[in-house]
Length: 145
Image (cartoon, rainbow, N blue to C red; front, side, top):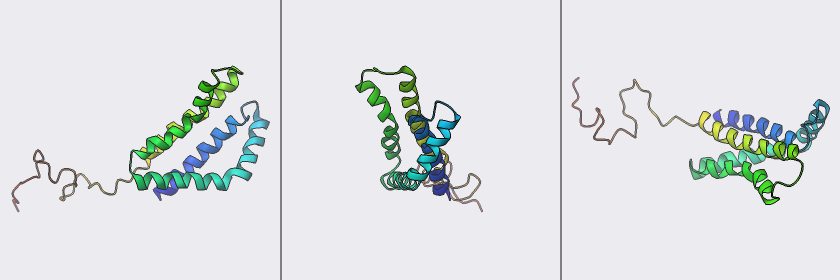
């Protein structure tokens, strides 16, 4: 269920970022028109791409989230490559959704983190992290009962 929530949240953030990046920032009608086109033609491929990113991150470990989040820096690299020439408003609108997408990927990564391997704090069984830690109170403690 966490995977579904994360994928749904990232698809919504991605659609909003793409809508702003492709010209939906001018007025409400443009936002609606560009957003409708993106939902109609890029909705299902975007769900597939976000799902692929999610499962790649789960497969290759927690450090993969930073590599995937760096995809949102691509618009910033384009602005740096063009040496900042062009319309200043469009440059800001072009860079902002990419940075927001990167921040959203990292945020949803931490919000929807799988915590099933951790043990509840009041349970009797120690967590895998503190089980072998000599500084832990539970390490080598005699059973009193």
